[in-house]
Image (cartoon, rainbow, N blue to C red; front, side, top):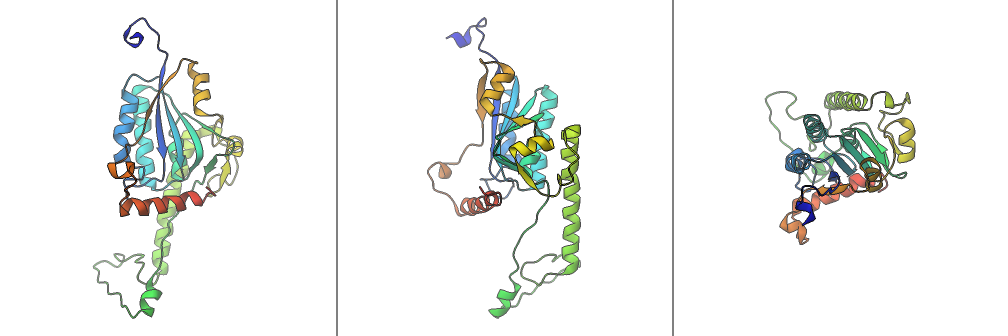
Length: 265
């Protein structure tokens, strides 16, 4: 009843968005702009929040989806004039760190893993296996680069060179985003943009994050002990709720486990 009385002070409200998992548009289990758009929009618009907190636990993924999600957060933050705080749990690496720098400040645990500001492309080549089995790959194209990096054909030097050019361009974009958001808080360390990653305490020294702090106590410090929290996240499907994972989600889970394993998690 008290909540409905206009003179009753309920304290400021902070919207909390959980961003956990790999980033990409290939599976319902991944973080994507399409899946997160209604979540982020609701967090910024419902109940007039005093601030928005991002709770991040992501080893990264798609550069495009990372950029789209981060851009949506920044756009709403500026339109609504709402501060955004990021809190890193186990890891905010690669695309996960891209999301973190969308916030006005970043807080970590001393053992959080942060960084990996780089771009990676990985795959498999199966042409030798096919050859041993007597299978011939037949590909016909119009355009010399149309079959670029076909995993069932021998690798071509010119294809690899072209891919590295694309990766370098993405890396420049990623680095520029970090520099624009972190500004003079970054140190002059030469390994910031090499794909290296660090524990939270070292990330503070490098200027990649602002300090050690956990979500609830830090937000109470910033907005008072009466601060309220409204949590937003992706809704799980009926299959996921009852553990009836589809093949697509099973494969995504394996890939996600491998992504976290890169950081010893």
